[in-house]
Length: 294
Image 1 (cartoon, rainbow, N blue to C red):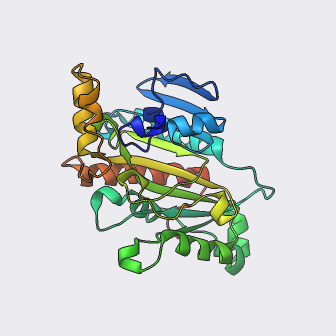
Image 2 (spheres, rainbow, N blue to C red):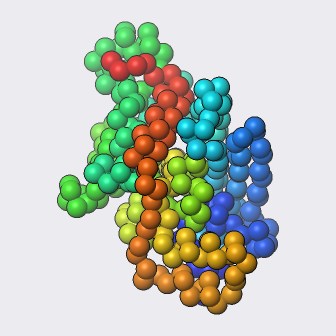
């Protein structure tokens, strides 16, 4: 069994990088800012990529307490950290105001999978103004942002990749910012962690239902992913609890059966998704200097 398959299921690079695994091709840094923890992982070679089970690239993780526990000042600080960390991985563009496609992946009808659509639904689109009202666009001084929520295959009959690729051919954005729900190893991560990566994303991979990848190789432009864990595989949750109790070895490995397909999510996930979607949309809107709804 290769090293990556020994991990319980998780989309988070910071959970897949075991503390006891020596990875000379990986740079790991962690900073604490008040009640927030920012982890930065760079996977620099193929050996480390195979070991961690993630593509070569940068992975930034912001961990925080449940949003209802934050004061107004702390919430503003968290928003500023997200704005900074997302901005730090965006590709450099020649134009002073880039054209960006913000894609909200997931199924709006399933609450735990609705972070992407809910977030883009709160973002003001401005790309159309560059052509239809250039004077207003120049006055706003914002980026040209378009949004899309491609839905899921069972509803549309089309892969998310096909929808987004079609929009990219028409819009010609400088890059795509893709927002999606993730799977975590620990229940403590659910809706209290944001992962930002410059490696793109493969929708559905966290729950064993991977679709076509959205990345530079498939779209021809950079794809930045912003993900929030909302579910834990049931077997992974049990394994995590057992490890916390000091149980290791074959008992844990027996729980990581790739045929398992049961996932759990918090009972108040609807409220948590609404809160985190608002936080992400506020940070992204400030990142691109977007105005309120036009």
